[in-house]
Image (tube, rainbow, N blue to C red):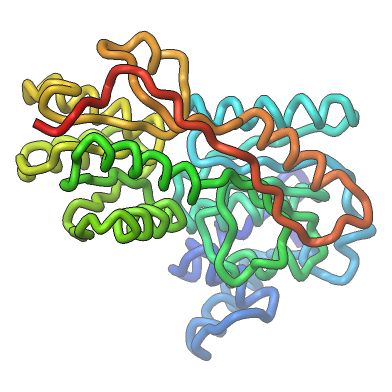
Amino acid sequence: MRPTGQRRTTIKDVAEAAEVGVATVSRVLSGSGSASPGTREKVLAAAARLDYRPSALGRNLRRRRTGGIGLLIPDITDIFYGRLADGVLSCARSAGEPVMVGTTGDDPEREAHLIGTLIEESVERVIAVPSGDGEMWGPALRSGLGVVFAERPVRGAEHVPSVVTDDRTGVRTAVEYLAGLGHRRIAFLARHGQAQRVRAFREALTARAVPVDEELIVYAHATRDSAYAAAAGLLQHRSDVTAVLAGGNLLGEAAVLAARELDVRIPRDVSLIMFDDVPWAELCHPPLTVISQPAQDMGYRAAELVLREGRRSRTVTLPTELIVRASCGPRR
């Protein structure tokens, strides 16, 4: 028996005791996915030792739920995700639903822990900008938890409703605009989890008969330090690059800062287009050309989907728009 007043054992405690990841514990305890016999034994032994009771994953889950929406986003300080969260909160407030917000840092293990926490808190619905794959989300989906993905779908969970923007058209329009200015050495600064945008970038280059150089597709994690390192490394080591497409405002901010530090002039030396029309983009010198996407509407529509009873699996695709300012010029 657990002494009265003692903190309830969580899925993270079991993972630490078994020396495995939270996602592994979730798979073992839910009976889904793969785990070696040794790993399974370690997890079950740790759960028994800690008196962990995964009741939220059991047959009585639906009966025990108390309502509310969980919102999982990579970074609350990112303006895009702040606006998305505002859309969710606005819709949830009108429906009288409380919202619990968690930040994942685009880390699947951290996301798995937060999913476990939301299940333990008897939350009924989750809206997530996902980091993990379909296998990691499997236990939550099989438990009957209502899930809607925002900004990006999940491979292996295509049946889950999602609200996304038209990345393909947005990227294609940007590449066509840059190619029309004569640029052929175009780089893409991407965040992990932006596979659709990267795929659209390759397709757009090929359609314009522009060579695809995989070394010009540079990835960063969802932190300012990682974004800056990616942008600075690109501008330092690839002097042949004449244009950069940044996959989000964090990456665009990093590109502007790195260019300033390295005395790379925008747009004279390098043209720049950024996903997300954030307030500082128009105040930049020069003002940035952007691919605008409706973050607040995305959050609101995701909340509508997750709150709708008897909803069918569907993907809502919102439009993007290229807003031309002064950060792009002809190739020199």
